[in-house]
Length: 338
Image 1 (cartoon, one colour):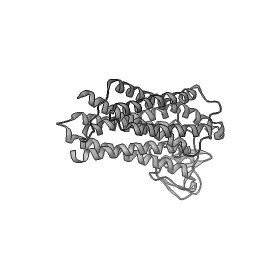
Image 2: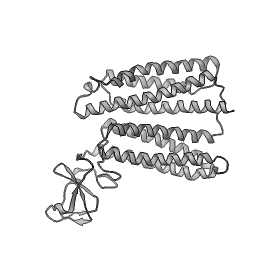
Image 3: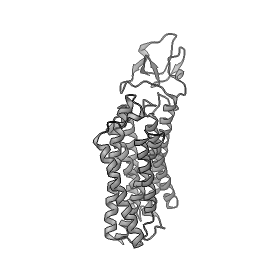
């Protein structure tokens, strides 16, 4: 079991990142309500591709829970039945959790693929948990951490359901993002704990402290970024063009924009310290690379009216930056324990 544990943990980590990417793409394309119910999609395990499949059809066999769109409302089949020539309201009940009843095949399949990635990541985490029992005598904490990751994945699935039920409530979307960061952090601890080729590091106390501050600032930036994104979502839902999305931004936007200078400065100082003192924190090169593209994507969104893909890139880069910084902190903590 130990032989496959690390590989399984890494696969789970990659799949979690793919879920984050897919979720960001869902938000980019406005596909969050592409499947208005959960866990099925319009009452199907494999969603429809044509709106005709969601219209009432005489003589058609309907299954319990199957959804149709009638008069701009979602109706759910009460039981299994074969439809008669005329529509009978007694066979249907209105969908109560929200009143969103629009079918867009692209949105539907983007959201459906996002859910598939989530399911695959959940399965990978469960497999990792099972394999962690191979360490029950040497590192029992791996079992606890792997179990906690599975609990968080279940929480994410439940939260995903409530996000859909609430028609994309902003604060729930933010919680969704923060829970994803926690999953990433624990999964990175699991991977680092069993790796046998961790490179030795010689960090200084001052460097360690600034490194922790830089990680904390990144987390604050991500939270501020989700607040800005919530404002953008609200404005975009009104049908306003991209040029107006940040025309009257909230105060969080200005803090988020100014904060990026501080984040860049602190990480640049860490990079300088690492080079000057030969601390072997080589992953700081990745930190600077990710930060550069993160700032470029932010500038593109503000000054060039949200070019396609920049929102997804911005979110994914932020989570990658968090992952690299957190792993650097793990190396720092490991050195202090030695």
